[in-house]
Image (cartoon, rainbow, N blue to C red):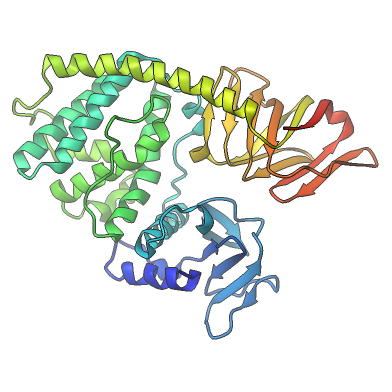
Length: 413
C-alpha cells in the first residue's frame, strides 16, 4: 500500500464525522515509508519537498525528514503536522494503518484547538508501581469498566460502570494527586485519539489485555481506558463530545455525572475476586522486577557498537519516545527506540537503536543525565575536530565539546 492509498482511505473513513469540528482534510500529514517522507498538505512546502507528478498537495522528501521521529505530531514546514512511521506499523491492513494515521491527526486537532498536551511524564517515571494495593485496585477497576463496556443490558452496564468509578475513587484517595492527574490528562489526550482510531474502523470497544497491564505500564493503560470511557459516554450522555473541550472536563468525571455512582444495584466483585486481584497484583510486581533484570541482561549481551559516555555536566532530555522506554532502576531508564539529549551546543540523537540513561539526581530522567550507554546498529564514526567530538551515521548523531566528557568508551560486541 502506498502513502497515497493510505491517505485516500483516511479521507474515506472520515467521511462520517468522527468528532465535532475534526476535519482531517485540513490537517497536514507526513508519512515515512522507510525510504522517503511523503507530505500531504494544502500549503506550499520548501524546495526540499518535491511535488509528486499527477497529485495535488502531495510532496516527497528523499529519506527521513529531521522533524519526523515517531507516530506523533511535529512542526514541519511551519505547520503542526501529524507524523507516522509506516515502516514501524506491524499491520499490513490498509484500514488499520489509516486508523493509526487518524489517531495522530486527532492529536493535531487537540494541540491546535484544545491545547491538550497529555499527562506530565515526570509522574509516569515515579509512579508507585510496587504498591500491591494500588495495582490490585487498578486490576478491579479495569475489569469493571471492561464489563460495563461489554454488557448488553443498560442497567448492568451502568452498574459495572458505577462500580469501576467507585473503585477508581477509592484508588485515587490513596494516591498523591499528581498520579491521578497524569492518568486523567493522558486519558483525555491518548484515550480520545484511541477512541477516534477505533471509531473510524466501525468498532465500539476498547482492547484490554487478558491479564491486565504491567504495574509500571500506566501510560499505555490510559489508551484503552480513556477509549472505553468515551464509548460509555456515547451510550449514556448524548452529544457529550460537542462540549467536552469547552468545559475542560475529565472523561471519568463526566461519566460519573452521567450516571449515579450509587447505581451499582448490587453489582460488584465477590470477596474471593477481590482477594484474587490483590494476590495477582503481588505476582505482577514480582514479574515486573524480573522483567527489569532481564532488560539489563539482554542489553548487556546485545550485539552492536557499545558507546559509553559520562558527562562532567549533566545533559538534558530534549526528546524521547514514551511508548518505547521503561524505568529499570532507581536512576536508570531503558530507551528501546529513540532518544535525544542536549545542552547548549552539545547534542546526541539516537533513532532505531537502544540506550540506558543514568540520572544525575532524584528523578530518573528530569534531574539531568549523568551518563548514557548506547548499543548502536552501526559503528559510529567518532571524529575529533577543534575540541569537538563528532559522529554522524545512520540513526546516530553526536556533537559534544571534549570538556563535556569525563569518560568515553567505544567497544564492539
